[in-house]
Image (cartoon, rainbow, N blue to C red):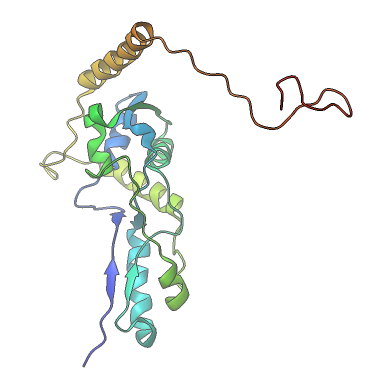
Length: 220
């Protein structure tokens, strides 16, 4: 008989990744880009785990075989970020914070590799509480520090076409600029062709202007 444990790994990041998606942001900073297309404002959250932290989960299970016997654990960093926050951190660590240009999912193809082809309108979030409670897990490195190390490593060891022949980002900057310009122009046309006056909002609490006043000037 033997003990077995199952570890659910999310998106793992760190040096020497098989598919270093973070390079899409780093290279744009290196190439002098100022903007980066992001679908749906980058509000989605995809669970990530630094490689060093991912390894620590396994070592804890080995050190605590009775607690980890026949258990299933989610392996996650204790700090998680939205896609937008992730991209902003990467670009900042690379030397210049990029401005994020939000577009709808339907025209967000230039940034699809950043989402790992997941639905950008939904979160994919794993809870690591079980490992913290049963194994005493704590991050060996914070997500921000791990990401900084990752960015520094790839800036010193750039991704090349020879090493990653199937890297999915074409870095088609001309196409991206055309898309951003066309989207901006389309928004202007939409506002002009379909004018819609936004309703004024008044919250529900009264604002009496003198002591003892009943309903205020808005009848509240």
